[in-house]
Amino acid sequence: MSFKIYTKTGDKGTTSLIGGTKVPKSHTRIEAYGTVDELNSHIGLCKDMLTDKQSRKALQHIQGQLFSIGAALACDPAKETKMHIPDIQESDISFMEQEIDRMDAVLPPLKNFILPGGNSTVSFLHIARCVCRRAERCCVRLEAENEKLAPLILIYLNRLSDYLFVLARYAGHLLKIEDISWKPRG
Image (tube, rainbow, N blue to C red; front, side):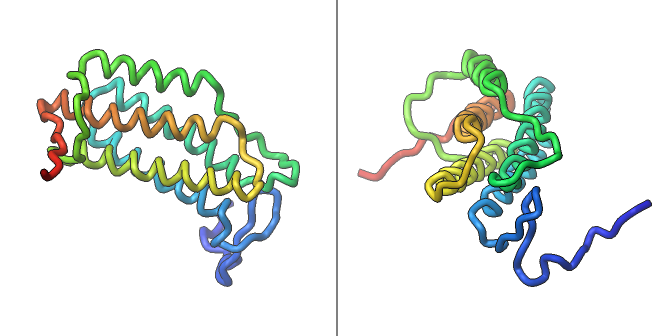
């Protein structure tokens, strides 16, 4: 049995959270999980561009975690859901920290601000980092509106943006592309 991808239920600008509550598509919760979905797509592109197997495997793992975050954000916090949605764990954050340390160990020390660029893989990783920061801001806004949020989501997104920054530098290092230093005027 197959079902149609279009339901027409959102044609008037509303959508349903997991749990059935209808909200406008402009709701902060929808913006948050939509931005996480956008981030997941950018990370998929970055993963496809990388040649380093360990980094590709790490990004695949991160994509799964982002799917869990998106699902958690899509839930109505006031309703109990029957669907099991995996939580983000401290070990998921530790995993990224270990990966950051692994990559950082072979990188030259960062002595100044750097500009995104030098290679399309490096640039796409910086775009993913920026989308990650936007997802983080959306979740902060959600909390500021007294919307319930799983406690580790903000920490995870913050660490992920750090990871993507280091991965962009690491990808450049593997490609023998030097960081582009920002040279302010004056």
